[in-house]
Amino acid sequence: MYIIKIKGKAKIPDYIQLRNDNMILVDYFRADRPIDKIKSYGVSSSDDEIVEYINGLEFGKLQKLSLK
Image 1 (cartoon, rainbow, N blue to C red):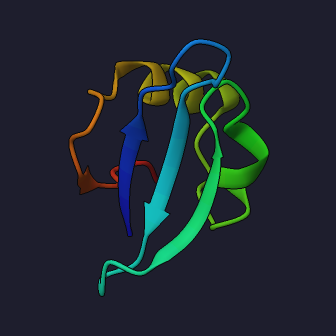
Image 2: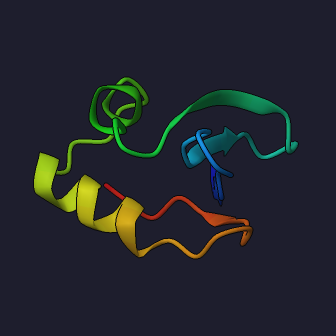
C-alpha cells in the first residue's frame, strides 16, 4: 500500500490518497480526518501515531505506507 498527501488550494482541504501495489487508487480522504479511514485497512497504530504520521508526510511524494 502506498500513500501520497495532496495539497489543497483556497477552500479545498489537503487530501490523502491510498494506492495499492499496482498504483490503483484505493481510497481518497481528507488529511485532517485520517484515523478511521487508515484503521479500516488493518493499521493498528494509535490515533496519535496516525495523526503524527499524516502531518509529517511531504506533499506530492508517493511513499510506502509504513504504519503497523
